[in-house]
Image (cartoon, rainbow, N blue to C red; front, top):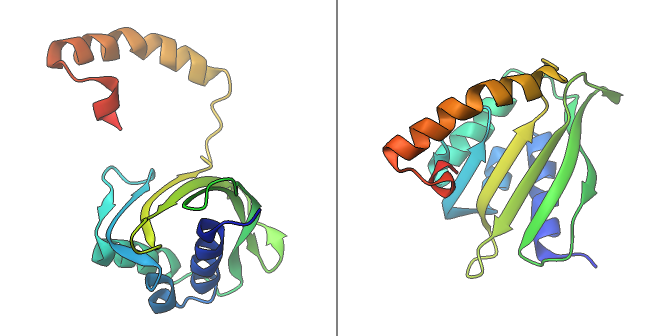
Length: 153
């Protein structure tokens, strides 16, 4: 089953691949919150999202393209996407990503997006060691500041 969200996201990716930011922006809600996890803060509002998209394509070759590998389609207003980049039809190294998108019920435009891009540094099992090492410090910080884990999102 195809969803409205899938259709909208395909239109956005297509526009970005053409470097047509204005066409992509037709599908972005004024209240959009876009979290690219390469950045410390989310992009809030249509203008900030436009700046992110424009910066993402500025100065990169036209033959560097987003390729969608898979979609979830069970929800008409939300979709998960697996993707990678290709340069002239060849997979670009360390370019895989996963994204989640949600449309507004009122406008059927993108109101929330979150991108997680593959890290060029592969920590492997060292990541588990680092997590175990810092967990007591994070737990202490959360308890001292009374910040719930939900507020960290």
